[in-house]
Amino acid sequence: MAFMFENLEVYQKAVMFSENIGNLTEGFSRGNYYLTDQLNRAALSISTNIAEGNGRYHKAGRTNFFRIARGSAFECVPILEISKRKKLITEEVSDSLKKRNRKHF
Image 1 (tube, rainbow, N blue to C red):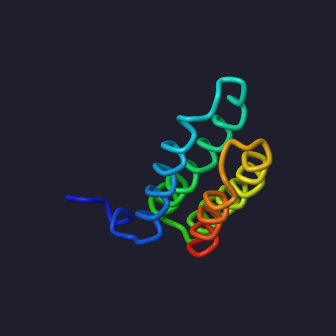
Image 2 (cartoon, rainbow, N blue to C red):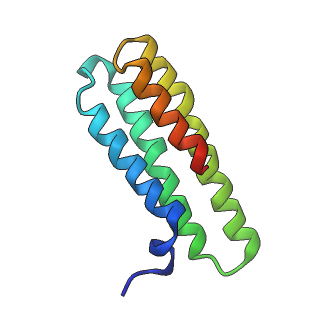
């Protein structure tokens, strides 16, 4: 039996986004570990905060975690921009990820 939040489209898309980011950053050089780590943490934080928020009994608690998830989605934007400027990713990859991120969060 699945947890209720696992059926949420936003949760499923957040997990997919995190997986895509993880696959993308595997190709980053060791010298860019700080970008790899921060981008993966921010991407993972989206789905984990959606899940944690769904486990809260009070609306205020849920809302707080959903806001944190949204903030983590926004946190990915400048990291993708820096990755693009450092030529770790192409403009097309950056734009595609930001577009998907913006569309869902």
